Amino acid sequence: MYRIGHGFDVHPFKKGRKLFLGGVEFESELGLDGHSDADVILHAVMDAILGALGERDIGHHFPPSDEKYKNISSRKLLKIVATMLEESEYEIGNIDVTVHAEKPKIARKITEMRGNIADDLGCAIERINIKATTWEGLGYVGRGEGIAADALALLKRRSENDDDDFQNIKLSKAKRKSKSPAESREKEELLDFDEPIEKRVKTKGAVVIYTDGASKGNPGPAGAGAVIMDKDGNVISEISMFLGNMTNNQAEYQALILALKEVAGLRPERLIIKSDSQLMVRQLSGEYKVKDMDLFALFNLVQRQLKMIQSWEIEHISREENKHADRLANDAIK
Image (cartoon, rainbow, N blue to C red; front, side):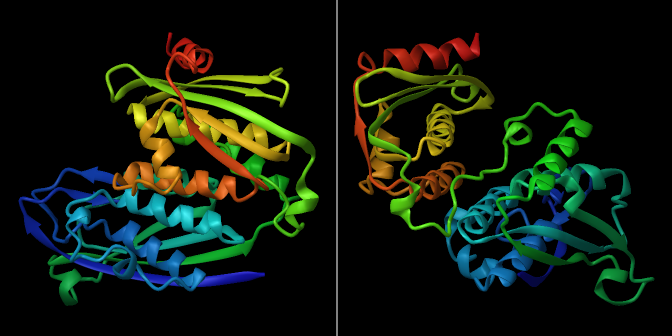
């Protein structure tokens, strides 16, 4: 089953503003005026995806009256839309963008822009197309007063057997030879959404995970550590992974995401999560709201992963109790 959405956005030029298109900053004396960074390409893409999902538009989800979105990077907003897509039963089929502008010339930046969108949406770069046209001197675009963009998004229902998509993602990233966390992130494919949750249980009893994230510099070089144990305290697996540059809070969430991805294959009857990050524990417990936009996207991904667990709980522990996961996280940075 397929769904199609269309998005359109336009912003006028303004002196003193930076010019962002497709998440790429262009050298220009004029930027686009708007409440956020006014990236017309990403705004059109978001509206196209939201339209296909039947989720209204970006003005509804990120209202210009809300000061927390003032000058915010549109890539942060796109990542939030990506989590909404992940929570649905659809994934990107392809996206086609047309940029309407007399200036700047964007041809040399198209690959980078496509890569940004593919990274944020977790799809292969081949599924993203960007092209440009001028208005031959006609209208507000032709007079050089601003830039417009429209996008079409085709979404398709997820298929567990769609192995070609995984290969396309890996090949795409290999061609671009990037080592960022976004590039190395694999597509989340957890469990069968159509099976009753009782039938998903594979491991009887409880599975316990200890997770920790570490960052030198905050933000700075970061690592994730996790220990997964069975109900008798036997170690099932360990995780120690370098994450690139990020904050300590982001590393804490990334460590949990990696651990939950590992646990998904076990399909435990009950999951106990132990972490020394009081912020993350309280956010996932519903005691704190997630105000940081970068953490919000990670929080949503964790929530989606936890939906696949029959029963779970999260507990705050001391650093001393979490020293095994702490060591794995710090080893990843060395």
